[in-house]
Length: 496
Length: 130
Figure 1 (cartoon, chains in turn cyan, brown):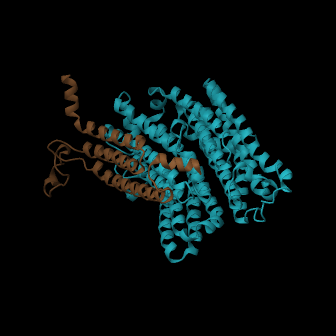
Figure 2: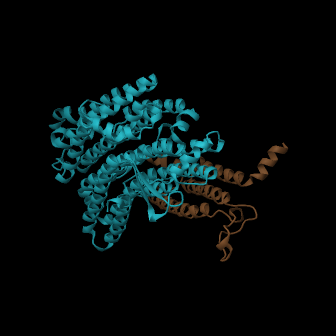
Figure 3: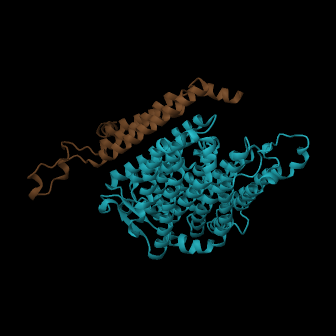
């Protein structure tokens, strides 16, 4: 049984999503428990696989028994084992959390929403687990197309924002596909391990150079790296709040993982960092991403929209940390990848709780939130501490490694950007908490707009948020073990 | 000049796909009408499909079907057969392109129902006013 775990990770959510589509017509009440079961199976398979990989080294699974360069293989090492576990668990937590809000807003299209949600998770898990460059493209499009549809289910401007996302997302995926085409012309293979082997002999080739640049641009478009970020804030802000808790933490992070995977395991660290000579340019783009993201976040007056800009900052951290090209920077980037999944998850779930009770989450509307929804706001405070980087939370440790990496590489621009964005983070969240905490007394007598519905969200929504908030501290406490057990084995030897 | 002409003629398939791709990119970025943008996106995807299909092609080669008896004792010459793999990959890519197109058109219908127009500047004008 255990040798089929890599296949189960993709097959179970895929079949569950079809089952949910069918149940949407036949018996709506079953959609939620069936999906819960499917995700629980996927999450436990991911966890089992991660433990197995940590103990016995990478696992290769041949789909249908076809040998590597011809068939599709799934390859799991600790890097994507970690991403798989993070994706599956946050999807599971989000599924439980979204129950009440989906029932309230999407009762008429329960099957469609849950089915798409499950298909989206399938795409992400498949993209993470696959060891085949073209297979990755197909699963990327599965995840993207479901994301377009899910975002478009939102109110008001959602369909226009989603359409813009369709244009940019399709261009990104097409660029990636084009890069894969160039690689295929030069090597005649699509298997990642095989590509890596053949590319070592082709380092001088102009076509490989073009393939590298095109693939990177495509992936940067997908992960909303600074100059290519235009689609993200609108799409994530206008997405329905039960869904943004799923899409916002996972999509960009998985794309960062894909970039790391392609750079390290297809082109190889020697080619990516020494032969291409792109790292200076990319580093300055990352610095710009962090600084511009911070400034744009400061200009926002809506909590959810502000958090979308925080995602842009975090993408800048991860890309920058990775391209620093030293061990500390890469450790920081990989650790931040894991931490940021849960930080963003916690933030968007907390925002979802607020939106469950409030008509919107612009700052004035948050008045009195601390007294009415103490648990949700407590979780938001934990997230804020983690995003800023306060010690017991996980955000501190990854930021520490990033700072070390920037110092070692003597890249003071990135160092300054990291410190600047942390300071901006303090201002950002302090503003939010000021509205939510201090403004309550002055306005309470005069304005009775706070109706009796403004109270703590249902237990099913509060417990997951608190769980993730606690997880932020747990991840922080165990970050030493995570670094030595999961992150260090995948850092290439050239960076020691 | 001679060399440049030679380069264009001998690699004409690449020139065609690049031209198409740029037309598509221009459509997505510069056009104001949402449906025209969608058309541009579709052209862009088709250009990449053509690129993949053309790279499997070989001069004087035939479809990759082994007739019985032919392959029994001697291994087939790869140069005699078109490489079918890129074509098979593109079957998947066509499905992806069609579903993206479908989602995009459905979204365009939704946008039209809400704003009563498909011109992007008019929609943005309406959003700004509200």
